[in-house]
Image 1 (spheres, rainbow, N blue to C red):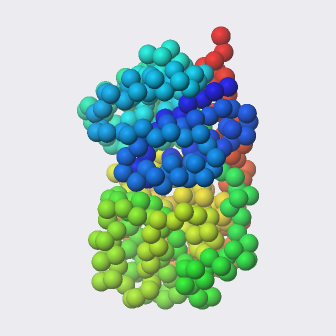
Image 2 (cartoon, helix red, strand yellow):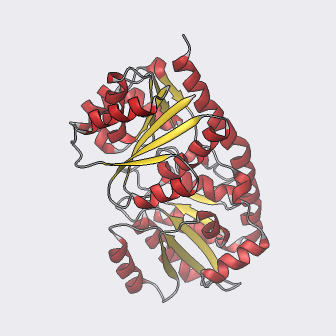
Image 3 (spheres, rainbow, N blue to C red):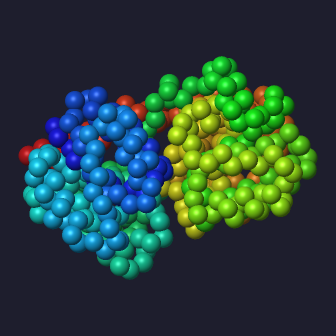
Length: 373
């Protein structure tokens, strides 16, 4: 089987990390895969990671949001690669890639990775609707995304398949040696209790929410340290705010992290504080933290409640409830036994409910569906 994947990339986020795992998993099952990256912004981080993983990769300049010239270029790429299926990811690849697949008469599969508000606005809603009605199958990465597709009528219901992200939990196991090295690299003392936060530094990811709760929790648990991984347009503003609000060294910005497993190894627990206006298609960082054996404090937003089991593998709080988030941070900081217990359950949930092999096999089943006579 030959499959061409198409995705626009401006850096490396959850969907890109998912694709790195999916493409490698498909290749291990004997699928001949190629990914065409519609290149924009800092796409080299993604294409470099793909190439390092030995994945067949080409980059095609994405141009402006409205770029109909991508369609004939993708048609030529489809005819050159001769895939059995074209699998697109995110709105730009869906629109241009599914149009190209239709013109080239190749079955199309799309994965929807988010429930971003732009899907409700024109012209994006019409564009997404058109692409969704061209595909032979629409993959929703969570039940939350599947409901979103249904509510907006973005694809025929009988073509939608829900497939959660999967993870190779063994690759995320933290050893005492890994933890010691990671904490040394993060300049953490044995007494420090590190709370990890990893996302792009953009509005609505909840950094303001965490700052408010962390300021209160720090008054009662002086050993708390907040480690902020990621980069983005808000970095300078957030760093200025942290300098003005917190004692030196208590909030640390570590920038873009290539090895998220190493970052997780240095943390004691993790927080995913997404605002309700942004939502989460899945929340891969939460799953990565769980696979690393970390309890996760997450907002009751989007699919996060599908990933984190409240009271078992972490704690779910309402978005904007600063008092509840403060209480959650303090409880996990103070109760070492609870952190260990929840972390063990989190790791178990990651490796039983979100297996990488199960995800890859489910995607393969979708391909078989669209190729069956």
